[in-house]
Amino acid sequence: MDDLNVLYKHSIDWALDKAQNSATIALGFHSVVDGMVRFEPNGVEYEMSSIDIPKDLNSTPTSIKTKEDFFRGLAFSFVNGKALQIMIDSKEVYNWIMKKFGSGKPQLGGTSANMAKTLSQFPFPKILVYVYPLTQELIDLFPNSDNLFTIHENEIKHLKDIEAEKGIKAIHWIFEFFQGQKIKIKGKEYTCPRSNRFIASWNPVNSRLEIKEPFRSYVINHAEEISRFLVSGFHIMRENYPNGESVRERMKDLKKFMEDMRRENPRLFFHLEFASIRRDGVRKSVERILFPISDSLGTNEVELSWIAQDLSLKANPVQIQKGDVNEITKVLLSLREMGLKRVHFHTLGFYLLGFDEDFYDVGEEKNALAFAALAAAQRARDGHLNTERIKEILRIPTSNLDYREWKSDKTHFILLPTKVIKNQKISVGLGDTISSLGFALG
Image: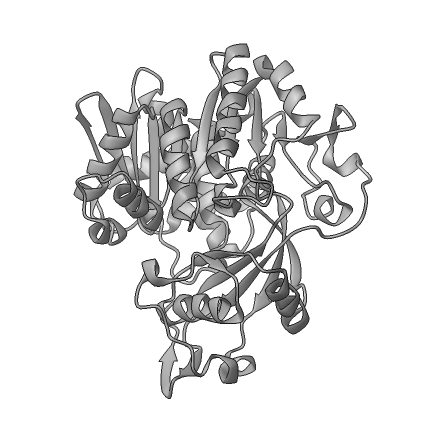
């Protein structure tokens, strides 16, 4: 489609100009060390030989309390070629994983950190990211970018200029597996159908999603300088905490923070990145407490199917996971009715955006989506983001869907066919690239 090619080409210069003229972009509350481990079936085949493979996603463990929970999650992810993240609730299991697999190859992780890293590659003047606990091992994983800041000792500082205490306080193991690998479970051999990853996360220091000082006071006092705030990290939360708090109490504190920020700057837009929230109580708290006061939501096909079920919406979760545009549209309309002004759905082959034209410009949303698609495709192809190579992605065909725009009630929809990379070098963090650029530039 010629018009689609024109949109993609035009979006590059447009995005660079828009970024350069943006106000501060803030991000919280999830930055962590990822331990990358190449999964070798031979190393665990004996331990996994008697594991019951969950029949579907809803049958996977909601948290890891035993070795069996760990292996069941890994088996489901490997056999189905599906990404899956589960939190580790047992220190004993954490110690066992560390002993068996080590800490892996360290890499910057966490939704906020990945988004900040993406945005810092572009000419946004100031990216302000929440990093807690602030350790040297974590700081050293961030890029050495002049526009990347955090709050340290009651003032804003370049991340590269901070010296902090040493020690890994949290780690998310990412077990990468690859198409064609084989494993035998209960006498049957399984072949991995698609390269992907299984994530086992140990993060007790951040599981309350507490907004620590001095970051909290600083951003409230400087809210007028911030145009966009991306909020994430819900997937590491618990339903109940050892100190007696519930996730609802923690979510109400986050709601108060957002209300305090907006009181200081009514033009500030908040985006929620849903991510893979396995615990029902956590998901429902986000949906019921934060959706009505937020501006924007980012979600993929699995996450949107959970939302549809949680909120008893009239849509088929199975068809949502298969990418059925009509079923996805139903859910996006329902979420708009709840108060969300913008919902960005992304899956392999297309994005579907539903938004309120009174708050978002149609032309800017088109360009932001197109540029996010190019950046994500370049990162998937090369394994890392390289702004000089984004133009090369223009030559890659889009999926076989047609570009569409339409209106339903007060919602404007854009369906954007995306560039499809056949042999991706990475899959981790692509959703973060898509959502952060789409929101920050839109």
